Length: 325
Length: 147
Image (tube, rainbow over all chains, first blue to last red; front, top):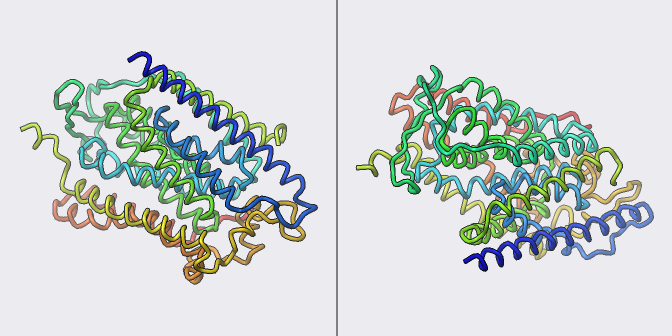
């Protein structure tokens, strides 16, 4: 068994190195192209290379996202934005649709198993999706280098949250607040790991909703998805059990990202050549990732993904500051 | 009786069912239209091979331009203007994308009558407000100031 785990860890490490090599090659190639751009009217690269490379990279990102316990969007935007020749506007539009497709695919199963709670999601989604529209509009109005600086800083914040935030399987909620009581935000789910039905409710709902304003704006502005922020707020602040928080967060993205995605779509910031290979790549990668997850050592992989995010965040920051063009 | 206690609500199941069907339909549509696009079966408004080209007077290829500049350079309509180009290979893809992006509104419309029947007034109001927010985002009325 330890041998198997070691083999899988080695395979995941190889995937990371493979991704780094591809994005590195793409980055060098893209910068050469850009440097030559004024002199030439036509690119020498066959057009199909880009969607193909995009598919391969997003496939690997899909695997890593599942193993690292993060959404696809949070890896997609900084890595594709940092190392591919596409404008950050199109990358963010694609990032939102990637996160949206993943959430739409996961949503039905999570809702039917009563792990994602509609009663918890609907009020939160109303706040977050309204804020995401504002975020998308701000994001599309900002200059690309400002977006990259803010994106880099956000990714570094996510790295910090991932590295330090604790999670609580069953947080203690001494007393539900008035708002959650009047909205009837509560539920029961079957916790297979302990063989019991777990009753849950939430507290500090007004504070949680306030934070979802910020989360929504950031999701819309950067096209990141927002699972990295949703889960800590639902779990640590509002006191929803971890499983309910993770599942509800995933489902929530299908609503939050929808509103922002429409803004990008209506502003012409969506290129099918980027969107479709990315959605298919991430979804297929996620399916493979789920199979590997059963046998992999999540803790070691989580640190590898944190390392990848740290690198991508620094790249976005330095690109925005025009230190690493 | 734990199954009954832990069962999802009627509106939650209804939401999940429509989401499931719509998601697979939208995804299939997305893949089929993309194959049509890259195969060249339908002519594209902006040929895919042109996206990596640098237009005269620009320092960057089309796909490296800001969305606003890209739309101006290629005379691409914004908002729902793409529907007039849906017969073109590239804009045909927007049908699947819009289907996926519009699915949530459909799900809310499906659960709304259930919430009304249950006299769940707070959630009826929340659902109507969410439909209004998503419809506003989808309407194309909201515009950014370029850059």
